[in-house]
Structure formats: C-alpha cells, structure tokens
Image 1 (cartoon, rainbow, N blue to C red):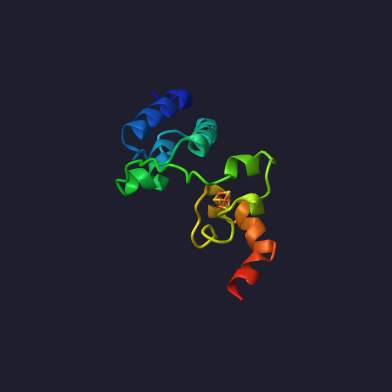
Image 2: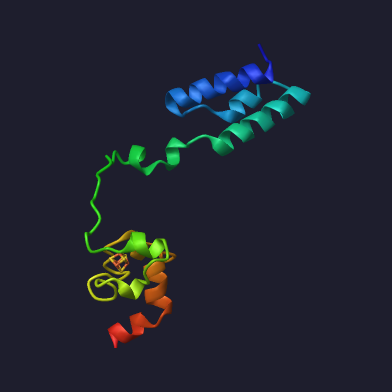
Length: 127
Ligand code: SF4
C-alpha cells in the first residue's frame, strides 16, 4: 500500500522500534503528489520526534543520577526575585562559573553567572 498516511505510520513504527528508519527509502516508494504529501508528513514527524542520535544518555549509556542541591544555594529565591545573587553567602567565593554550586551559576545565562560575569565581580575576585 502506498498511501502516504499508511507509510507514515510504518515509518513511525520502525523509527520507534529502533530509530533506524530511513526517510529517503520511504519517499522512494511513492511518486508525484503522494511523495510531496509523504515528505511533508515525514518532515513534521521528524521535527517533533525525539532523536536517539542526539540523546547523549542513550548514546553513551549514561544513567540518570540525582545530585542534591547545595543547602546554602539561594537559586530558588533568586529566580523568584526575592533575593539578589550577592545575597547568597556562596556567591563569588565558593560558587563561581568555574566552580558552580547551583544551577543559576552553571549556565552563562543563569542569574548568578550573568551577575558574576557582567556585574564586575569576576574582575574584582581575580585581581
Ligand atoms: S548558584 Fe551559587 S551563587 Fe547562585 S544562589 Fe546558588 S550557590 Fe548561591
């Protein structure tokens, strides 16, 4: 059967079973308007489907390990606007972008990391 919807279902089943479905092989099974329709359907599916090739946990066999937050970390209050980064007693001393103690300091876009980097704390600490 060469119905694009049916082929899409086959592709999804094959993809979910092992993540090795080849979209080009499916496109070669139809022609004309059906091919265009199937191409659009596959594009839509592939744009939203989780890709095992980019799943680092699956690719490298990493198992999830929960790491508890540092009890002194004030990220929750900072993210809610109740405290400023410098109100945290670890800010700029124990906790820096090079040695983050909380999620706000991990990403360069995190509140503490941005405040540390662009609030001139980095220069004050390193000089
Ligand atoms: S990320 Fe670091 S500086 Fe920011 S609140 Fe947590 S421990 Fe304090």
